[in-house]
Image (cartoon, rainbow, N blue to C red; front, top):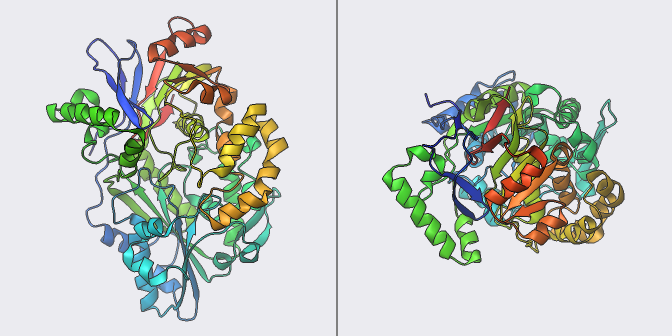
Length: 527
């Protein structure tokens, strides 16, 4: 059994600690007394993944075995998570492809001929053929693409169906093929606790008409624990659960959820998986070599190197059956991998932001995505209460270049140039601009026919940070583009020492500091 999560208190013996900063990284000394939150050691991966998948399908929880749900003449649809999971992408074979192959084998034995596969990409960009092939494997891709293996299209009105309204007035509109199937099988990867469960189908296969009910400022501000649905006061989770339960009255869903361990970085970056005082001479040499090579490489080459990183994850769980029951077991496995107990809040929270988030795979981490990763996701990686106290300061390490992917993020460019130039207030932005961007014909065209995120997507990324913006007194980026950060309403510092000095204006000269050491991911259980 691996070691549990650990909180280090920095003293004179503590070595400099690794800090990510986009496509760069380095080591940084922290003030004495700083609390450093480390995740638990990686759980051991399942030795025989194929056997685990087969067992999950034949012995599901709160459901009949999958073979008993399959019969000749039925319509079977298999949906699966898109490229936003996991991060970084996992080394092949991808667990989604392995699960799908087992489902297809059982379907073939049962004489099922009408089978469709759908990428549950929601309002994300379409996956390219190469990206789909990598996820599902060559054999599945060759057999089904392009006619029976497609991306979901949230703007294809002819292939969407409105199934009703929840007791809270939320529209439930999803992919027509999925809704009209005799069985919908959903293959998921749970990277964090807010993934999976009832969120998978109504979000992954939903439309803007549905998503607007929970991807909005009000919901974000009332989802203070959306990274941990166990807490029972996540408005996002509650909305998706209502939608999922309505869906269960219209179609049968067989959920397959998977979890991965924290083996995030391959060679030559294995030192990034370890605690610094346990670095061997080989690890120290690898760090120096990788850092030197990274700093000497042109920016485009650095990005390409990191794009090629594939994580050697071990699969820690495969669970199938009833959506709600499956998800509870998934969360238990996920928490064993990520949960670390932390005593008390601090005045300052420090995070290093890596080169990747769910929405820039094979792309560019633009300033809005940097904000979303830091304030929307990592700030919210807690249970019970935030790591930082109300009115505290968050210090983030990232260069925040004023740079956008022209194909993937066209509406982001206009959002950054036009909307944020007028206001950074999430509620004001939502009221004045969201409908215009969501319904813009050009953005709709690019979403449907190119590889662009939906026109409304940058709004959702900005809303993810709404809780942190309201909660914190100051947000400071270290080593960042001053104009890009200023456009978002935050401050910049040249060095970490300067950032601490700036923070003292808010939290005094002797603040308590916590460093959330990530990646790998950690969920702080703050007491």
